[in-house]
Length: 129
Image (tube, rainbow, N blue to C red; front, top):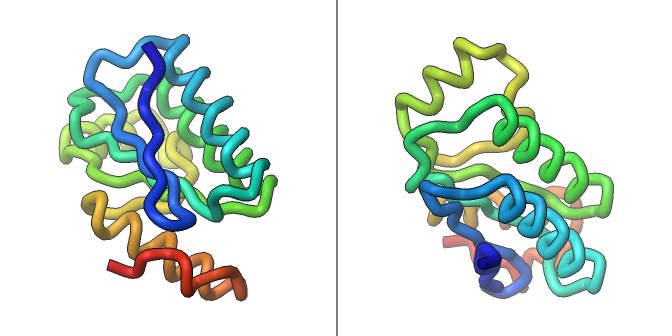
């Protein structure tokens, strides 16, 4: 089963389930990039509120997804990180998650809006929360 990706204006929203498989995260990457490539979005917010654990593989995939979105002209924000996840990521290495972060989904959407606006993008179509 694929992870759903919702659109809010020109922002893609997805919430990762706690039991995310490697295949699901790869499918998510492909689906999000396809929507950005098709011109349907300027940014992606990945909500990881449900994740109690983010291992090194997941951290690498999230960072790579953010880089791919950026290369394609979009912006990416990781939202909803649990304190234990942040602690683990810092212990694994400072650069494990190389993307913008926000406390929650609402903050993630607002951050995407600010980032798109600062680049001269279509900020009128990106919710600012």
